[in-house]
Length: 141
Image 1 (spheres, rainbow, N blue to C red):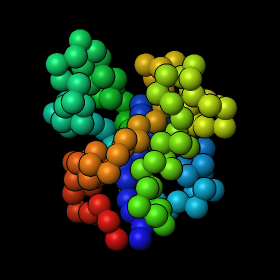
Image 2: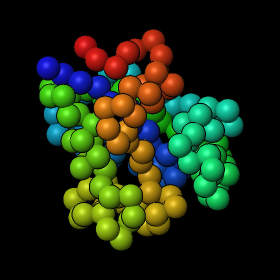
Image 3: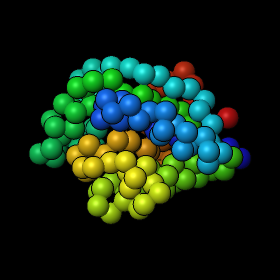
Image 4: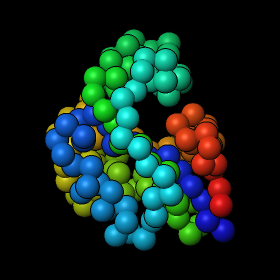
């Protein structure tokens, strides 16, 4: 059974002109873009996206970063129930110095604070993020 997940090229990826390279990596793996949008994020949406970090001291920095310039958001579909996990492997570990060579972050990111890509970290977050960013598309086929 196929499944969908949420992936976002963050402002640093858009600013550096890496969206095409990032999308190509998902497509070469056999994943499919169901929907995508280049958009400017307002503070309210950024705060909702990072809601789990609201009480943390870096929350404001996350929101400022996400709203500083456009992002490229995607609904990514794969053939199995674990599309979110496959995307996370392609993206690489959050901390850039831990990101594996061959992953997006391992090959292209230079700092952890600006690590190019966000991907849902489980089926629950995928459902929540898809509903937040692409309410008309839906989480599954």
